[in-house]
Amino acid sequence: MDLGTQAQVLEISKKAEAKPVVLLGSPDPDSTELTAMTVMSGDPTYSGPLAGVQLELPVFHVLEDAIEVASDASVYEEHVGVMKEALDADGIRATMARLRQS
Amino acid sequence: MNQTERRPDLDDFSFEGREIIVLGERDGIGGPALAEIAASMGGTVVLSATECFV
Image (tube, rainbow over all chains, first blue to last red; front, top):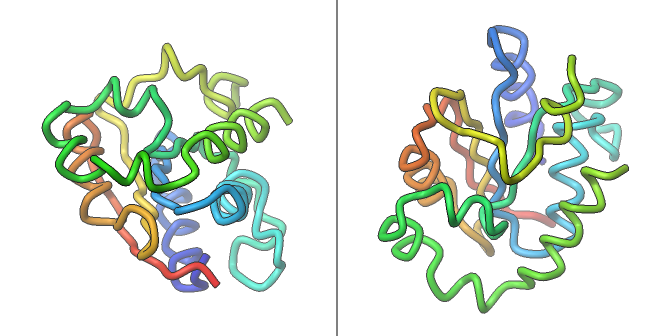
């Protein structure tokens, strides 16, 4: 995750009364894991402001079924649509499930 | 901190009234698209970013 974005996430999380929720749009399992880990257990590359910072924010990926169900169907179709088929949705969902269980 | 917050149950979690950080990627789904989806779930987007994963 960009270092500037990490700084913004950290600042928002410090000021928030309740933990903000993170919604990811990453294109593959690897980038999903890296970004999710950064906002859960800290920057795994130890290069940004979130290095060693365990925010433990709730994280979802937009391709998870729960997001499709919870969102407006027409909005979801307009913005995700065929990308659900083009991207490795199964791999991303498996990655998110594994991270939640770890 | 409770376990539900850290590892939310997908079936029970509600975005209604929650602050949402959207982290999009250029090769996946971008921030503006995620922000519209987040808003449609009743959340308030407090940060929207679109990055390029390398």
